[in-house]
Structure formats: structure tokens, C-alpha cells
Amino acid sequence: MLKKIKCLIVLFSVFISFSSAQIGNQLGYHPKAEKRLFYPGQFANTDFKVLDMKGDVVFEGTTSSDKEWEYSGTSVCLADFSTLSKKGQYELIIKGRNDADPILISTSIYEDLSKALVKSFYHARVSVEILKEFAGEYARPAGHPDDKVIIHSSAASKQRAAGSTISSPGGWYDAGDFNKYIVNSSITTYSMLHAVEMYPERVKLMNLNIPESGNATPDLLDETIVNIKWMLTMQDPNDGGVYHKLTSKKFCGIKMPHKDLSDRYVVMKSTAATLDFAATMAKAARVIKDYKTDYQALEKECETAAHYAWLWAMANPSVLYKQADDIKTGQYKDDKIADEWFWAASELYLLSSDKKYLKKVDFDSTNFGVPQWGRVSSLGLYSILTQNDGKAKVSGEKKTAKKKLLFQADKLVKEFENSAYRISITKFPWGSNSEVANQGVLLLQAYHLTNDSKYLKAADACASYILGANPLDYSFVTGFGRKSPMHIHERRSESDGIDAPVPGLLAGGPTLQAQHDCGKNKYPSEFPAMSYLDKECSFSTNEIAINWNAAAVYLFIGLESIYNEGNY
Ligand code: 9MR
Image 1 (cartoon, rainbow, N blue to C red):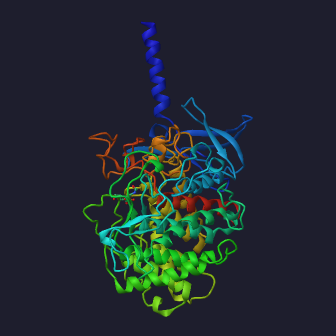
Image 2: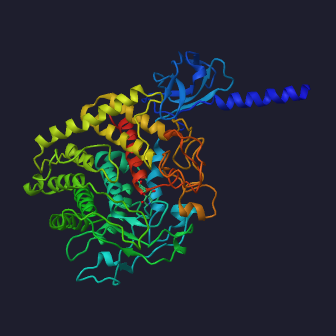
Image 3: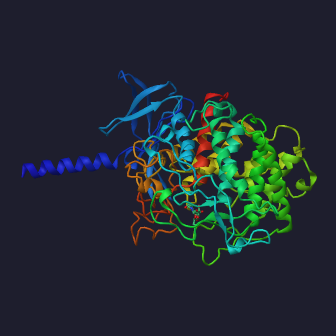
């Protein structure tokens, strides 16, 4: 009997300590950042203290009252110790709870993380061997040479007949699959270029140990140029139009890249892909001009390609992507392309100061929202707002752009301030974690415009959410944090025979879209913020993708730069 009671007590205390686990940024906090841990509602209005490693109390406080988050159905209170700003290792002890929760405060909290987020792009390179000296145990043979890519019937032209081949090697695999998509590559490449432009000092410090390390170019830009070079091959030299994607006919099975020998095709040119390409190449030309040593010809190549693409788009203003019957891979289909026009026109005007582009920078033609692959107008705002070479005259545009951007940022700040988990996200699309990361990026633009710390705080909260301050208690970047995804939907990590996935990959995150992917009723919850599975079958919540990672790259480099190099 006594044995039974003891057993029950043990079980009960295991339950208590499990159910009362704290939630927070699993990497820690920068001394200048806000700092908080979340506890279940039962700890509301309770005293807590923070002790240093000598056991001295360095902070005392009381938790907030509890609050429910409508997107998770869970209630939390928070222990806020933001004013504690001395670097070090601490423990937080809350009354009524036996466990002490570890806290790290450090200035280099995001250093390894941001390097790994960028390094994951090296692991995703197509057509080249991934070498042991750079990739360690994740070294692998080259996959997909892409030197004989077939012109699909949808892409046939007078000079390039269906069935003929072109060479289009390199770039990065898009995601868990092995295809390459221009629309998605564009926002990805732009995000990385914008980080190079905004945070040059921090970016120069980042040694990624990639083949180009040691040349005169920052590694982040070297890595980005790998994809720019591939993108350039996707433009038809005969007319300037850009193929929507380079793909096999259907997704291949789970295997290593070099084992996938499927035929690869370029499919139809689309206006969205061509405009996205034009915008990205225009931005690339402007960024690369300051780093020409290793890439003498590239600035000009990007500039020419951008103008040429625009010409095709003007002649073909609304060619929407339509998936051919025999092609079954990702679509990146977008039927609203006023935002692509706005973005491309903005970038081309900033590059050339040619009024013909300015005429198309029409703020009333499109909606502005948090960027994602099919909603790119705000990327034009970012570029207009940060243009500082004075070439194109944009003072009027800057005023309007500022208004449009702050309108969105203020909405996000309001959500952040009112939400139980102190986070701005309210919609959970496919890749919801990248929605969070892109909100963070937008908030950082607002911070740079205004120096108002409310934007920085909300951006920092996006970073913390990604790293564990979420109701699922997951740090969503592989290899980082106490509990991070181990079974991502990603063909390389699934078939390389190594338990841990490639580090530095951002999992898509909770969403209610495509909840059938692991079978019926397999997800733990119908709440959008809870609908996540760390399972390989979960392509809707546990895939990775270059555009998602790129937003995180920007966010974490931005925060590091502001905290460590800025005046904040
Ligand atoms: O990120 C894309 C998401 O917005 C779409 O809802 C989803 C379904 O069409 O596709 C996502 O993109 C995938 C692409 O089509 C193929 N490569 C993997 C991408 C990430 O899941």
C-alpha cells in the first residue's frame, strides 16, 4: 500500500514539474533586451527571485496575473526581470515551485545561431560537393548537376524548343525538396542582401567557414552570390523573361540529392517570377557595387539582367503561373501581382534613377503587409527607406513609405503588447515561424526609422518566440536550445543516417493548413498555435525553406548588430 502511495506521489510530482515548466527564450537574453519567462496560470501574482551563481539574490519581483492566448487556448503569467542587465548565469526561483530555472545573459547570445542560420545555405548548395572541411559529418556528394535542364513544353520558344536543354547549375535547394523556384529565391536572396546592406559591420565579422571564406567579400554575401549566379541562368537571353522554376516533374522520394536522378525541367516564364527577379537583381547590383573585388563583372551583369527582365514584364504584364498537368511540384502561384510590380519598379528606380520606373512606383496600386513570397510590396518600402546614395530622388516616396511601414509596425506592436505571450503573430499560415521572423524584420525597419524602442522590443519578442517563448516550448531552429526539432521534413536530413538534422534550419511551425499530412487526427490540437508535430511526415509544420531561414538570418543579425554595434 505504502509502495503504491509513494508511486502515486512520484507520478504526481513528475506531473507537477512537467506541467509547470517555464517557457522562454531557450538561448538566453542580451543584456539590453527585455527578459521574461512565462509560467502556467497557477503561478500568477507570485513572488520570484533571481539568484546569481554565488546564491546572492540579484532581482526580486512578482509575476503578472494570468492571461489566455486565444491562438493556443493556454493561459500564462510572466516573470519579468528586464532590468537585470549584468552578464552572467542565473537561476530564477518562483514561490511554490521546486525547480530553479536557468537564465543566461550574454552579449553573444545570437552569434553562433546567426552563423548557423546562414551556414545552412551552404549545406543546401546544388551541383557541388559539400565538403567535410566545411560541413563536417554532413559532407555529401554533389547533387543535381543541372547542366542539361530540359525546356518543358510550357517554356518552349522559337530559339529554345521543347525538349532542348540549357545549363542552369548551382543555387540552393528550396526546402525539403530538391527543386529551385525563382519566386521564392527572390525574397530569400533579397533578405540576405538587405542584411548585408543594413549591417555591414556585423556581417563582416561573420566567418562561416565556407569555400569562399578568406576572400575580400563577407561570407554572407559570398553565400548569397551562389544563388544570384543561379538565378541569372534562369533568364532567357533571347527575350529577358524568367522561368518560374527548375524542377523535376514530381517530388522525388526521401533520398540524398545525388541519388535523385530525375529529369529536370524549366517551366513557363511568368510575370511574377520575372518581376521578382528584376527586383532582386537590381538590389544585388546596388549591394555588390561596394564589394567588387572578387566579383568584377557581377554588378553589371545583375544590372543588365534587371532592366532586361523589366522589358519582358512590360510586354507580358500579366502572365500568371499555371501549373502544367504533368508538373506536380511546388507552385508558388500568385494571382495578385501588383505588389511584384511595385517592388520591381522601386528597385529599378533606386538603381537607375530612370523616371520610367518611378511612374510605376504607385503606392495606391497595392496593399502593404508583412512580406512573404507572394506579398513583396513591403520589400520595396524597405529599399526606398534605406536608400542613402542619393542617386534616385525619393524624398517624397520616403515620406509615404514611412507612413505605410509604420502603420503596419504599430499594428504589430499593439498585438505584441496585448498578447499573453508577448508576440505579434495572429495568423498562422504555412511557415508561421517565418511570418514571425518577417514581422521581426519589419519591426526592425520601423526601429531604424524612428529609434523608438517599442519596435525593437517587439522585434526581439519575435526572436524569443522562435527560440522557445511560445506555447509549444520549442526552439524552432535545429540544433539550438533545450528542445528543438529533430525530425524535420527535409530529404537530406532524413536520409543522411545522422540523428541530428543539419543545424541552423528554421522549422515552418504550427499551422492548421494541411493537417492531414501525417494521417487523420494526428495533431495534438485544433488551436493554430498548437498544431505542430516534430515528425518527418509533417510537411505542413516541420519542413524547412530558404525564405523562412533568410528572414531569421536578417532578424538575428539585425538584433546582434543593434545591441552590439548600435547606440541602443
Ligand atoms: O511556402 C509555401 C506555402 O506558402 C504554401 O502554402 C505551400 C503549399 O503550396 O507551399 C510552400 O512552399 C513549398 C513549395 O511549394 C515547395 N518547396 C517546399 C516549400 C515549403 O513547404
